[in-house]
Image (cartoon, rainbow, N blue to C red; front, side):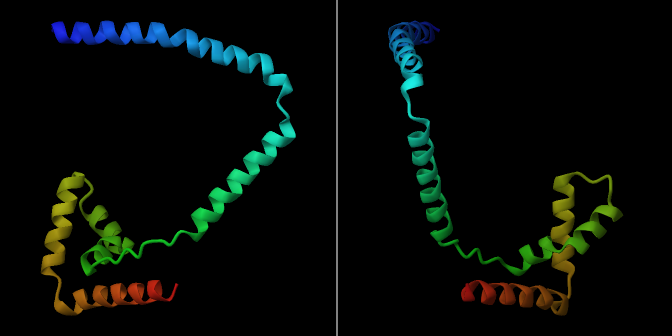
Length: 127
């Protein structure tokens, strides 16, 4: 408890020392605010925004390859059917049920999701 009090006293002392500096800084900005050239400020802002957008667009997206089970989980028709059939289940119980359904799927049904994954990975390689 004593350490906590010392820490709080130190933080309070630090804030008391720094606060006047911030007040002086913001006072200075307030006094010089009228002198700031809004056109230059807007130009700088737009330039920074364009640079940000260019870097964002040029950044290569990571190819997130997903597995057949995640393709199964993304299947909205399956999701809707499971939720409609089991409206009272919690999120965790729904997840367990989805896992059980996946385990009980036939190889043909699982292959359908494997093909979806392969198609998805092939289209990601093109971009």
